[in-house]
Image (tube, rainbow, N blue to C red; front, side, top):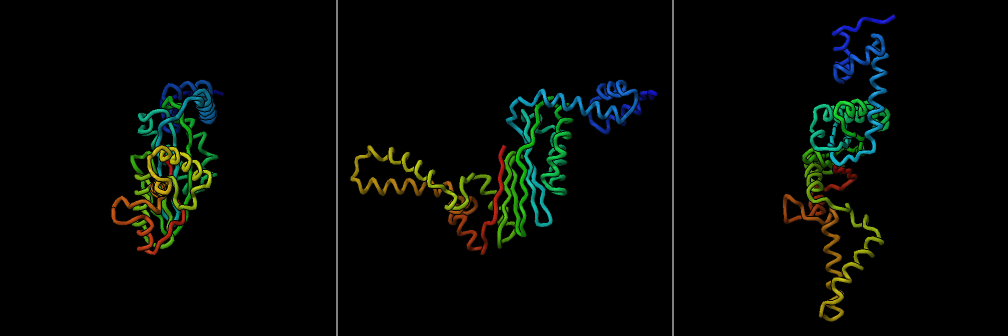
Length: 259
């Protein structure tokens, strides 16, 4: 038996889904006024729309971090344009996903993400995809977000939250490729050595001088790329390593993501 489709019924479905009044009205008509069936119809439509848009490249997006109780969670959400990345529905979706990841864990959040994302795809008309999601635990945590496009979480042993945040800010600005010297692989060292060998090969200097120049170029290159060897952006007189030593701290973990 069909139920009368009233303005109140349409408004309730609209409030529950955020989908346009006309789409809610059409879904209720198809479901003969049954709200549960109408919701299922709208979810199916959202899923179909999302599938059609899934091949479209997502070049933009936003990152979000939530911290508390010795835990920080970072979640990234991608879309096609900067315009949608600032859309209220998109921002609320990312906040909701981050809250879920923080409260229930990343795996649980991912299980629920598709249905929530599909609804916003239907509303914005753009492809939206979940990016990376990280959880970092520790007693000393600091995070930094730049323009909602880049985020870093730093976990320290020793030090304090202000130090951890300063290092997170430094990483965001300086974008080190490595945290420790040990992170540099032999293959990477070999490739960079070959590149710099070509640079010094034609220099008119004795071989021993050229060898020292080669070593200097390689050392300088990797110092600029390695966090602990980088000069701290807030104090040109010390490196990140000396800053950590001064505060009796060590880096435990770093997670970062840029759109």
